[in-house]
Every structure is written in structure tokens, then in C-alpha cells.
Image 1 (cartoon, rainbow, N blue to C red):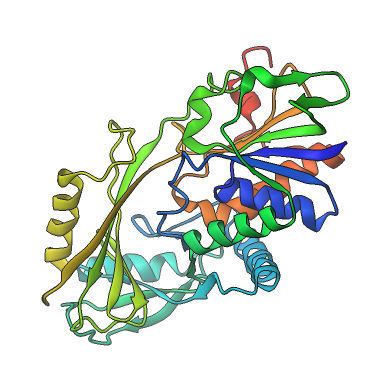
Image 2: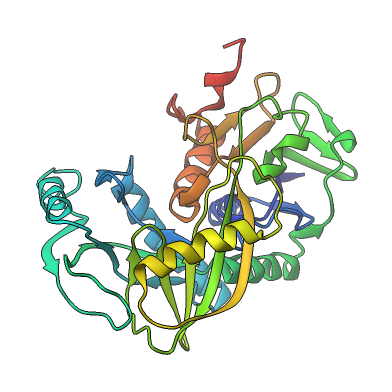
Amino acid sequence: MLDYIIVGSGIAGVCFAETALQNNKTILVLDDSSQNSSQIAGGLYNPVILKRFSEVPNALEQITLLDSFYKAIETKLDTQIDYKIPILRKFFSIEEQNNWFAASDKPNLAPFLSLDLIDKKYDGIQSPFGYGEVLQTGYVDTAALISNYRTYLNNQQFFQNETFDYNALQVENDYIQYKNTKAKHIIFAEGFGIHSNPFFSHLPLDGTKGELLILKSPNLNLDVIINTSVFILPLGNDLFKVGATYDWKDKTNQPTEAGKQELIARIDEILDCDYEIIDHFAGVRPTVRDRRPLIGTHQDSNRIHILNGLGTRGVMLGPFLAKMLFENIEYAKPIPRDSDIQRFDKKK
């Protein structure tokens, strides 16, 4: 009997799979690649909400865990996926500068907000008010993480490429059985695919579609991530990832002309150099109405669990929430109420 069947191999599924393996548990991961938001994600990790200069909850714990977690995966895969790179918040006024320095005096934000005003001039960007530097930032190459991790799982015979058949799941008191496989627990980490899941489709996950562009611009000279109304992430070879849009109505993975034009309009406000659009991606982020994740155990069975709702900060939240769910299952360590799906269960 396995310890865990994990449905989904996006960021949430990979993080739980790795957490289980690091704790010497046996796993089987099932996925049909129908959800692609993790693969096209920006992958940035940033401990500060830059619109309001406020702290991400549990930011220090998440950043600390993230560092060792992805380092272990890099060693396992013999592939770099974690890139340490500063994020610079472009200021649009003296008032924004003052708000930044006021925020940097707060104890929870002090480790993350540099006190030095960055006035470096980057070719291709006008920045008369300079930048503030966010510390302990970077990005995870999510496409490389997921594709390489799936290959690793497949090579270890821990992976099956298939669409999950909910009707084939039998739930007993002491185990679950899916087709010919028995396991102690099943973890659903399906992202927006939750809407097809009869156990958790009642949860208020309302995806937001995000669109990204890949630009080529030989005259844009950046060695940092710029955060303004969009983020601009240098990929090397004069290529840059730019995003992202937020569409609460369209739930498809198809890029749209409207999304493209929205990004172009924002880019043109920032860049004063020529660029060429190389590619255009879209995906639906698993976001929740109250902007908190969905983790925990089904109210009718202690064998069925969920890890979802990572939203826009998936690479930061993934290791943290996977550890939280694992410790809840294995050691009965409580999940905070604002993250636990019990907050939506009518019987609780």
C-alpha cells in the first residue's frame, strides 16, 4: 500500500510530492497536463505586496523554506530552477518614495525593503524617481521545474499520465483504492480542475486568467526584475518575460488579443526602446474569493485531502503549504483557520 496518491503535478502537486519523498513516503502522481497555469506562471517570489508596500503573511518562514526546498530539488534533478535576482519597484513620485521608506521602518518589512534608493539608469526605461530594491527575491523557472520533475517521477515509476476517473475511487475507513492501487491518502492538487472534482467542487475557487508575453529587445539592458504595472523579467539572450493580466471572467487557457493589447499598452508606458513579441501565453490561476489557500481534509473522510488555491504566489506558498498539509495529516498539527477548508464546510 502506498502512502499517497497525488492528483496533479503543477506547483502544488510537485511541492507535496517532494515533501512526501523527503519524509520517506511512497507516492504515485497522476496528471493529464490539462491544467497549465503553473507552467506559464511568472514564477516570481517576493515577500512584499508592492502595490501597498505591505507584508505577505508568513513571508519570512516561506522564504526561508523556499531556499532549502528548491535547492534540494535542484540537486535531485541536476538542473537549476531557482534564480536569485533583485526585484526593483519603480517609483512614480516622491510620495511613493516616502511611502517606501515609511514601510521599511516596520519590523516585519525591514528584512525585505532596502533603505538605499536605486537611481541606476537602465537602457530602455525612464525612471526619474528611481527604484526601491526588494531583498530576498528571485524566480523559479516553473516550466523547467514541472517538466524535469515529471521526468524524474516517471523514471522512478512514481507517475502515470492519465485523466483521473473519480468514479474509480473507492474510499474505505483505513485506505483509499484507485483502480488497482491502494493508498493511505489521496491529495487533490488540480488547480482550476477542482471544478470537476465531486469532493471539492463546492469550494469557492474562482480562477483568474493571466496572460504573459515574451519580448525580444536588444536595447533593453536589465540584470534585475522591474516591477511596475507589469513585471519585466530578464531571461537572457535579449529575451524578457512580461506580465501579467487579471481576467476574472474568461476561464480558458487561450491567449487573447485583448490581453495582448492590454500588456502592450502597459509596456509602452514603461519602455522607450523597440521590442518584438516572440510568444504569448495564458493560463487560469487557482484563486479563492477570500485570497487564502484551500488546504485540508474532506469533512466526510480523513483519507481525502486538498492542496489548492495558491494563486499568484505559488512558488512561495507551495513548499510552505505542502509542509503544513503533510504535518496535519501525519502529526495532526492544526492548519490555521484562514487556510483550512473547514472555514467553508457547513457542518463545522
